[in-house]
Amino acid sequence: EATPCAKAPGPWPRPDPGFWTSCSDPLKTYKCVPASICPGHLPEQCAENFEALACGRCKLNNVKTNGRCLPCPQEEALLLRTTFGAVIIGLSIVTIHALSSRQRRPSRWSALVSAAAVTLWFYQMLALQTDDAEDLNA
Image 1 (cartoon, rainbow, N blue to C red):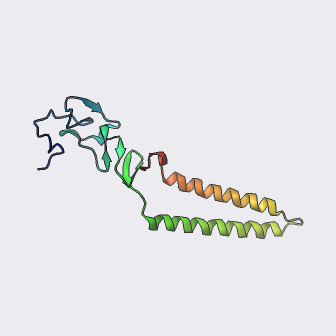
Image 2: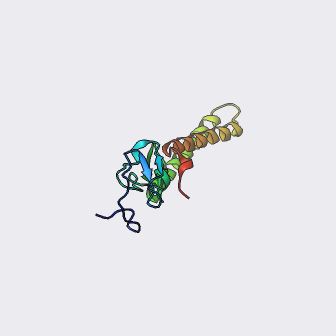
Image 3: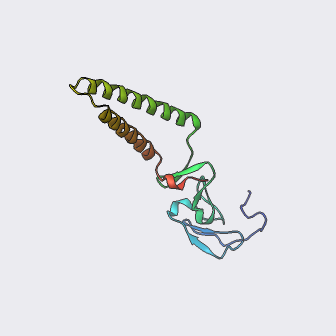
């Protein structure tokens, strides 16, 4: 069985679930928040896709969402969302333009403002799908 501390063979104190220790200083214990991201038992053990001190960071190409580190969306999914958004925005602009032209005095300014509002709404909905966007790995 491979251990995380192969360079510094044990025995090590075994951290309880919810706590994290390093191989270099196994007597220094860190509490993990939430506790579920640190399974314990061996030093430097983290839940799937977590890493670093007290499992406080997602691994590369993962994003923290609802307390879990999930793989980043694939480019195809992003392309699909963007295309869908462009279609929705385009249809909204055409609809708003058609409705504004039925008025006695059509207002292109109100159509533009409405289209901007629809665009803003779309990107807000897209942002809600990416919860904890500030936790994206660089």
